[in-house]
Amino acid sequence: MNCRPHHRARTNRLSILFVLIAAICAACAWVTWLERPAVAADQATIEEGATVTFSYSFTVPGTVPTIYSDVGTFVQGKHQILPVVERELAGLHPGDEKTVEVTPEEGFGPYDEQKKANVPRASLPEGVKEGDVVEDQNGRVATITTISDTGAVMDYNHPLAGKRFVMQIKVLKVEKPS
Image (tube, rainbow, N blue to C red; front, top):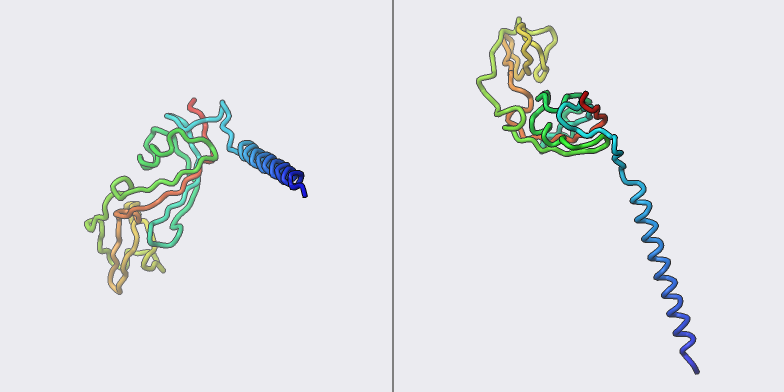
């Protein structure tokens, strides 16, 4: 009995299988390459003076998943947003996403007990409750932390003062500087 033809047939099948696997891998790599985000030569980059529109959300580790999200616009280099965020977004393009971890020092500073004030209950708007954010008679924004029959405590610290937080950012649009 001659086993050689059988061995040759198995070798041919393995060779064909190997070629098919290599072709599938090459096709997958090609499709992945085609689907990559393209950055056109004329597509704007976040650089000094560029107007940037971006979506963002804030999360504080250890709390609810997202505490705030919105869309904003700023001009790079004009210090209209947190410096750490401006620095991290430099060089990005529309469609790019970035996660920025912000320390209290880079964010809204340390929490300051001196920024709390006791106010008479009568000076508060009707129907206000603890946790509400209000504007005082001088236009300053504060959070009402406690309310009693006679008064309330207004906290003028930024809600993220003293907190480490994470910003999830997506660049929506970049207009080149004029």
